[in-house]
Length: 59
Image 1: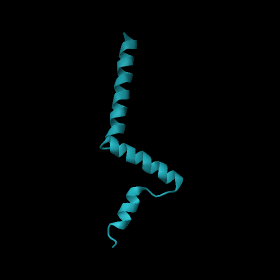
Image 2: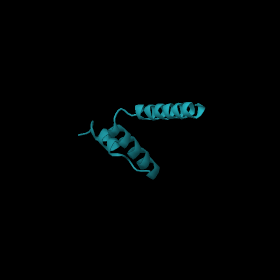
Image 3: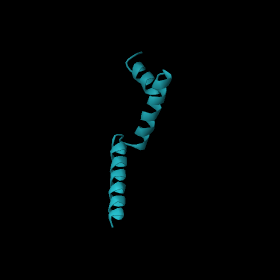
Image 4: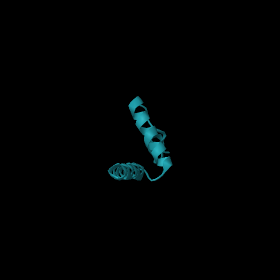
């Protein structure tokens, strides 16, 4: 009985953690962009969104 309660509690905590993690990004596309930006910052490069923001006011 206690093992079943522990399993339910652990599953609930896991699902809550996943919900919080996914709640940080509005969409899966947003998650992909976040991961891409982190990878590019680790490489020291600029992301495409940085390039687009820098050229909007020019011209």
